[in-house]
Each structure stands twice: as C-alpha cells, then as structure tokens.
Image 1: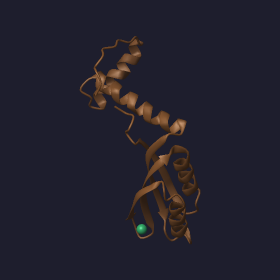
Image 2: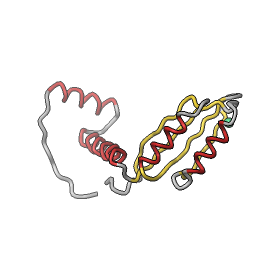
Image 3: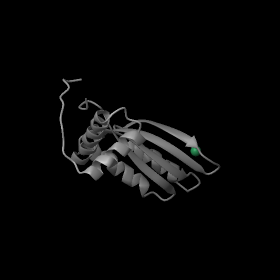
Image 4: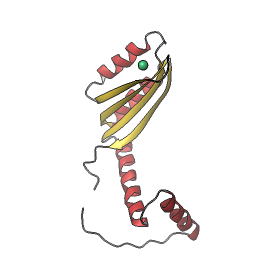
Length: 138
Ligand code: NI
C-alpha cells in the first residue's frame, strides 16, 4: 500500500445522505474504505471497457436434454481453451444444469464467448461476472 493522503471533496447534501446510507448498508467502517472499493470497481470496469487482461466467471444455466447443447458448450470452451481456467458443473434438477466457467484473458474474447453461449438454444441464462486479475489494483 502506498502513502495515505487526505482529500476533501464537495458534493450536494442529498448525495452525502445517499453516501452515508450506502456506507452503512454495506457495512463499511468508514467512507474512506467505501471510496477505495468504488475506485477499484471503476478500475476493473474500465479494464473490461478498454479491452485489457481480465478475470471473469460465466455462469451458464441450461437444459441438458436439448439435443446437441452439451456438445456445443464443450466445443466452444475447447475453442477458447487458452481463456478457460476451470469449470464446475452442477446438476440442479433432472434436466437443468449449471456450469460456472472461470475465464482469463482479453475482455473482448471473454465477452464474445459469453454471447455465443447465451445465444445457444436451451441456454436459459448466461451471466458474466466481471472481475480483475488484480495486478494493477492496489
Ligand atoms: Ni448436469
């Protein structure tokens, strides 16, 4: 961690009320911790938007009875093999499966894979959680 510096800022009273509410609801000790996390979250989002090296988890919920879907999901992941770090499969019910795929690489490729999976027939949900490799966040 670098040297701590003290900053002051000017915001509208209503925004300050909202800030205090968020800090308390999310259980932060103080505003400083909240601001640090807000900056880190923006850095992560910025990296995704600029197409940097990122980490993400794609959660796919699908009906495995749909003909050919399981094979397509495996094929797409093999095609992007350099981005797939790991995946976990859970049988949610007799016909519904969930797969959590941990991905690392250029944001563009990861978003593309997520969209390709989302479009497959039988996929009920494919949500990408955007995270960071952490190498430039302090
Ligand atoms: Ni299953």
